[in-house]
Image (cartoon, rainbow, N blue to C red; front, side, top):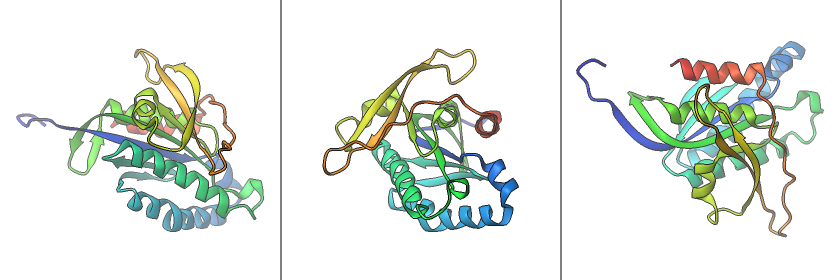
Length: 205
């Protein structure tokens, strides 16, 4: 953009992908596509719309969404995970669509309807650290939503989310039931090649 000023804005970014998508496609390509499309149309996209989000990228099994509110982004992420788990309770484990979701708050570069920058890259890397069915956030997000949502946090320590950059502290987020019981925590995981491939695609843009 030679001669043009770069537009920026601060926003929350949600990055998600499907766990074991390649394996699911190998086992049942048509069935997997049908379940994924149904999940998106009936659960994911309505949840995003409800929380005021905007879909930035839709890449195969990957999804990138922008939110003006950090609270809305995390609420949406947790809602997607819960609804997805509940609606597939009658399916065999090997057939279930499960997401990993990362949420970050950062300064973004705006180019038309697309977004770039460190905030996007960190969200994509956080997503690769999430275990199946869980939500992982940066400390910045944790600090913004603490006391605003009925959630508990699991401190997963510091992780390098971008080569050559200082590590950031990562937290798992769990809903708290009305009874006060906590939804079981899931531990942080090492990123796999599938998740890193989606994160790499975003970083290269």
